[in-house]
Length: 514
Image (tube, rainbow, N blue to C red):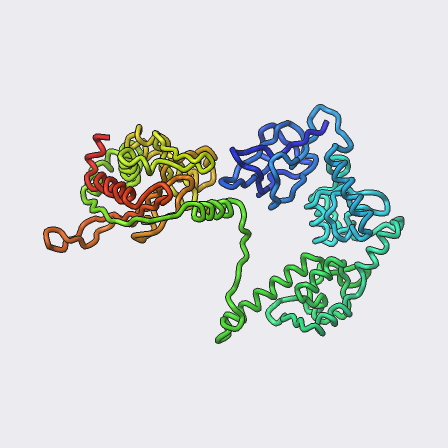
């Protein structure tokens, strides 16, 4: 029996996920709960486990593909149960492939259908196997599949490429295959000449290639390979041949791509070494896909900025007493294996200020037309990670001591940075603190963690000149930047909150009364 496995809901509110890495291949045996794929949601990368003991029958989406929750991503042949020739999903995809093939006689060149039609019937192959076959110049119709129901896997294609058997075609093939092979073996001299007439002049001075490649006047290549060469302005006669067909040089798609990339590297190196080349050639551009966590963060920032009118209040606290208190408590924390930072003091002071100024521990329910003032205190801690800004949440800060808060913050921040944090640990905050001073800087204009109505930015704590009793002295100071949602929090409310917060960090012993 075949078990279809759908992309599960890996977190509340997640509607889709990107297949980052497949951890198995078709034909691999798997055990229940064994990870089969890594999937990236809008907050974290999670491993998706196999639900059964069995064998991987079919991998459907390719790596990098975004899949809606509930779509089938992989199928298994379950151990001890009869193997079906074709699942309902496979039949549906095969039908779609047949329809495309009927509509477009040249569908085999596209290589995107799950079944490749040939003169002798259909070849079942995974998308990755078909791509690999095209790159290696392997005739997939001549490859014997070792996967379930004779499906061709990546390993089958590599084995065929190494043996060289797949390049030999049978004389029993139908007209379609004969035409495709004839097209693949067309000389490309005319195509290259046309490319040169259009102005494409490939540079090969800094690219090391076999001597015979530069002297070729005839090269065999598949139509798809020729199209790529035309798009990239590559002279196929200059590309190193990876194999031969009927005594002629045969160039694969992968060889063209590698040659084009080498050309680009050489051109960039030339441009970098030429006086004034930067202004003529322009800046080098790296295209990075805007997706996953980065896209989610961007959308949240845009939603917050364009929904709530932001106002930021700035001030500075003199915190010599805070510095001294931490220094006294730090050895005690070290004895318990806890690294005590200033963040727990800041969070306790924030909660103390929120209790006295509840307007900032709230959110606006626009649909209901109500302001929701919250009587619990969950503080989010904005954390920079390789994937972008995340906000782990420490719950019920008002009921926890400094060491417990410090321990939880350290653990949550580390989990956020190594992408192992659970989605629920990033939700439910009522107020957020962001410590941009950790990397330098004094003031900023933090963006609200919507729907919260307040976020406190902490600048760099260090000694600065302060006027005291008419004289300038060095004092430890802490710059703060408090952003509010001006729809329900007034500037006077922000100033009053800031003053209360500074009172607690300037006199940390007051926190003992909270």
